[in-house]
Image 1 (cartoon, one colour):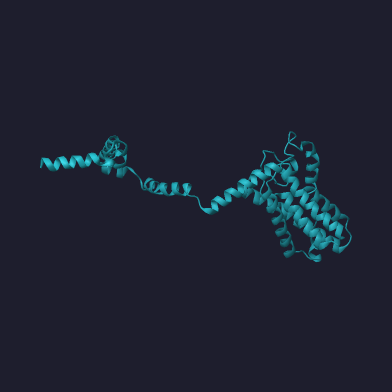
Image 2 (tube, one colour; image 1 turned 180 degrees about the horizontal axis):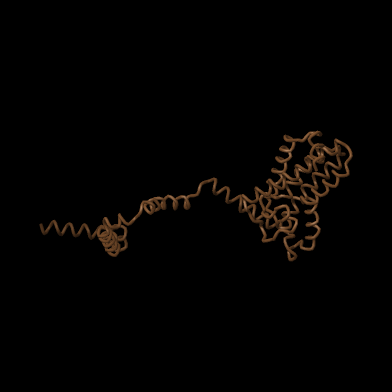
Length: 271
């Protein structure tokens, strides 16, 4: 027996894993053992009382926490792609906001860019359409103007509803103007000016006989108005692009519910 014990001690002594620097890999520390044993004792003492005090809601939350942590630590590919695109959109929109304030690189041109944006505002277009409708004497002109008025009113209501749902702020902390409050264009997504100019340009291209240079100018005007909203810091790039898409969809909607000449005459007589 003494000889076998001596051989066992020699084997333990020669074992590399029994050295001090490897002990933490083989054996848990004494402090950990003591803390675990004390926690086990406390949990065993709590026993049924703790089980009774914990409600089913708390147990459900404790079961969900590891899964939520795993989801935060391991986001999905769609989440990573969406966050990356969102970061690129914000960064590019801030870079293009060269007229966001007077101290910006193009701050001196802010008034001119604002004036370009006003050409796509809803209030001047509604007022101008009403004036032209009063002065119009042809049935075809009144039909087109009545449907244009319908398209402008639909644009304001649809964009205001979408903005209230999204409630997205612009890249810069810029408060909306008085005209924006009148048309309820207070949030960034989608861009109301972009949707309006897209709808108007498509409407005029379809229902007015225009020369090719005027058609090109009409499309350039719509693009410049959308770009101006990014330059003054009111909208992101994606807000303007989505505004163009919604403007085209609004035009298609107006084409589907197009009011005939008789309907327009009835509405004009009531008015």
